[in-house]
Length: 289
Image (cartoon, rainbow, N blue to C red; front, side):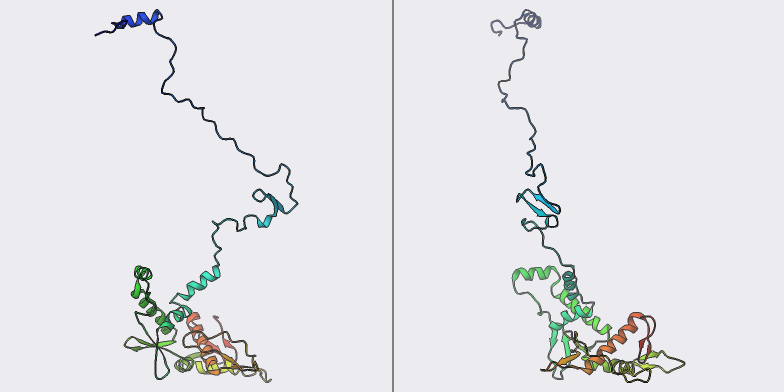
């Protein structure tokens, strides 16, 4: 049903529009919320003065509103987000302590597995309870990283490093022996070296080479006084003893047994690392070193 004044056809609508019956101007949207058009934020000026008030070598810090030396810019500790500086030397040392492929790292791993021996030998045997965490969270982390199997692998690798260098041997039944200085010297003193001298000379043994280093003979007929005993920086590793001892008066005495073993280790290591066994008495290794 049509309402009053309502056009009945499209032609009526057109006629009504042409006669001015409809407003020709757009009406405001009653649902529109009046807002200001977007205006980008205006950059606020910084606190740096127009004219740099700082002398040469200084720069203006707008935070503290003062001049600071240029070399201090960015090195302050005012921010809590700064990460601590990593010491590369300490990081390397920490890795070495845990590396079973080196004697230093292997020693730090193996010395937790020492067992008693009535004969005074240095014996080791793996024990799964050694270094096993006690707290639940630590036990979970230990399991994630291999647990007892990882510790046994490190023990085995560490002991293999010692045996590869001739520093120990397998005793059987899971027990290993690490040689003390005298035991190590006894195992290598008969090893042969190629004598390096004038003409044809018979080979010498490691023991003879060690003796020539510890008790050098003068090469020109003069009396040899030998080298002074330096401060001892050895010891601390399995199967090793300090090279010197100091009495109450401060006099330093050489430990000949430890010295012999240390010199023999150097000779054997030089043979292995440089594939060179040419040794001249009173001089040392010749070539390839």
